[in-house]
Picture 1: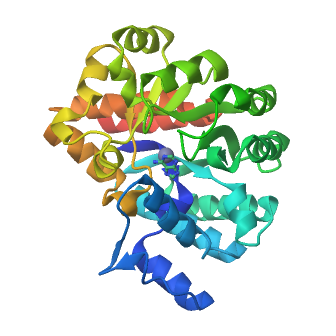
Picture 2: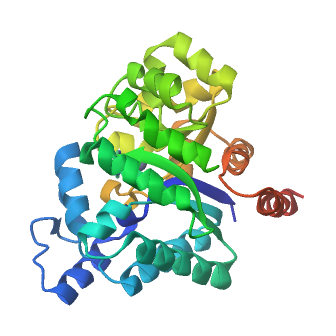
Length: 324
Ligand SMILES: Nc1ncnc2[nH]cnc12
Ligand SMILES: [Zn+2]
């Protein structure tokens, strides 16, 4: 089996339509506006976020979140994943009626259960939601910085990239950095190369969520390669959201050829009709990558992981055993 690792998946966005329908029944909600014929319904980024927020609101108890995480990571491991970082959103939990601490501990419990069953290692990246505003993102950073759950190892920001000015979010990222958390930020997905440059200038992340629209500026691509910034690429998501028209137009192969560190990720898998395994298959089919090149992508992900050195060494040992 091909081994893989994932750095970019929003846990609320990993709940498949069947599970969301079960949650809707449990809480007496009507999901028919957002799920039809067993598939999520949306037509652009704004309506995607609406469907996402609706589904997230149906995860309300500690048990809901623990089961979601256990279920997602167990299926990921069955597809060959040995490591996964999930984006977690205390704001979504609070809206659903759960405290950030209870939410994080429940997700941590799900991670541990999946590890006990399959051996997959998991960590959490707290994200602030950009369009919820600067105050909310700073509050998420302060929560992450307390590091009350040891599996929280990173901080990031997702949401509507076209909202607000990145410079206004500097404080949030400084709070997280001072706490020793790994830093990543969504940029260069819905907005162009300038958004990626601004993220590097102001937030100094070691990784960028997406970042693919850096391709619009060759100097920026060179900068990313030279600085060793890791791109969390999500090709299936990009095609579904029409960031690029076809896989043949996706810049992944060009970024790789330019020396950028690239990884493969599923983002919000059922919304974009994908999975981590499908992303690797897409790279094989559309980007001409052989198994050796895909194994290198997995190594890049482990190298860039927000995880302690000992765990990282154990993950590399698993990859080495496989390649012998
Ligand atoms: N693809 C995406 N971009 C920005 N924010 C998100 N939140 C969940 N999925 C996202
Ligand atoms: Zn994302």
